[in-house]
Image (cartoon, rainbow, N blue to C red; front, side):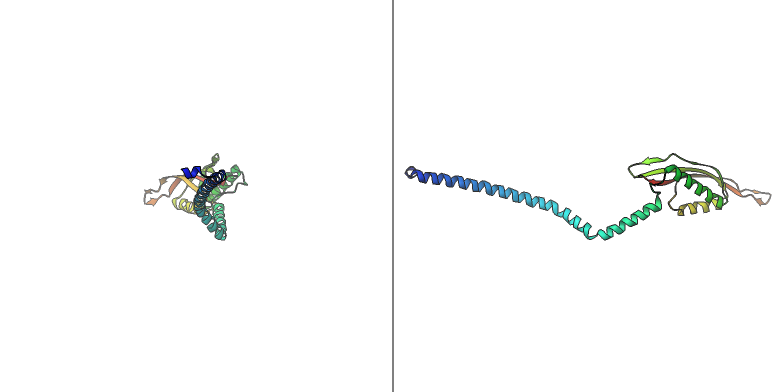
Length: 190
């Protein structure tokens, strides 16, 4: 301690400056270490995202092909948003009526329902109700053909009731089938 007191003023100032410089270096070093750790954590969290984006860029052509396939599927199963829902409903109803007539079925009643909006799925649900009468084979043929129509006509409900088909005096009467169909088509929302 005597030696510390025996130092001259210039030496004390140099010692104080060195201590301040050492403190600044320690604080700067701590700051750099914290920034380095932060940068390493940030890079570790960004690396998986970067890898996903690089994978998407590499597979861009494949993704474009898949998107085209999805668009083709969308047009196969739904109507475009460029047409009015009522027009679509009436056109599809007329198409089903024509198919029923072609299969020898009588259309007892038919009606287009009010379109129901489904914003979560991005479609309008256009309902159709039909009551048909005819023989069983023609009814099955119609249902098979409806399954192949594109854009798709979906069956929501089908109720069948049969009458006739009994034997009287050795003669078999034709069985008449009454079908109540609840159908619907999808229209993409604009």
